[in-house]
Length: 409
Image (cartoon, rainbow, N blue to C red):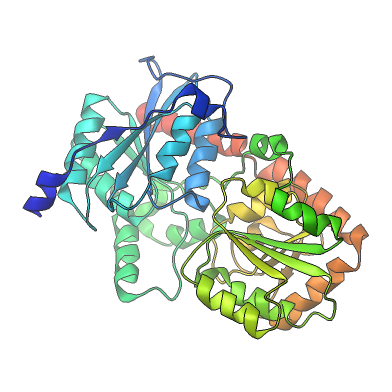
């Protein structure tokens, strides 16, 4: 541990030039905002350095929609592996936010606690907002005695987790009682935590939200999709991590049962199950109809080309990818599980199939392939639902209320 502490270079700022900023895409604000006014609530968002997935995009949607006249936001990550890129901070810097990378290699390095506490004190941070068991634990230790309130947003729990991860997540829930605010992003997560008596006074249900400005500004279809569109294929799409709980094996098995061959599957994202999924596509004889595009920062340009978005997950919080598809007026099919059920009303704003049911998923894909009237109705209803109930602006307004209450206690 001592050797690791000596090698840690400490926190680093990420800066982005104006020329770089012009190419960031739809999430860029028209000008750079500087955090200088002492009359604002100072919030430090502490996220993951592993990539830009659901939780990281959630953070970006929140800070992009919260009132900047009242809140000064800084985004930080703990870089615990030198091979990681701190993508969250890079994207936040391009959006005009102040960022910091706390260098502390290893699964748990006390240097991270010391660096974050010093940063909180030096910058007079009012609210530390953490996301996930590691940032929760380190953040709680760092905020103690630093005259800073601490808020956590639980994004969901793992299923079939290994022993260590199960222990970490159990410990995470156990320490929530020491937080000033706990704001789960779905009713199922809220109800689960509400069963803990000493936690009820800390809980605040603030539903997930999608940044509609991102969706509405995305206009171009990805070049890779243009050939499929011109050839008249029915494009089935998925965007997200390639991990077991996302259930992509179920989707590939369902597609293997389709009678029609006039479809193509676009999978956007990366993860440790890609080799297994590629083999499954080959075994079914559909390797030419399935393409893995890897992680893409221009994911919305793919989404625009989809005829249907499928999320066959075994576990979800409130899935951001599903919200984005609904906001983009892409018909959705999702597994009938908590999280997906929060968003999708079966037959009205999308279709829900029994989890793990290959046959039911195949039947739903077939029905949407053959009826564009149903697809159009589901898509229009879905967009209205997102606008009315799941916008990032509404979510950010609720967080501003929570921050204000905590700093004025």
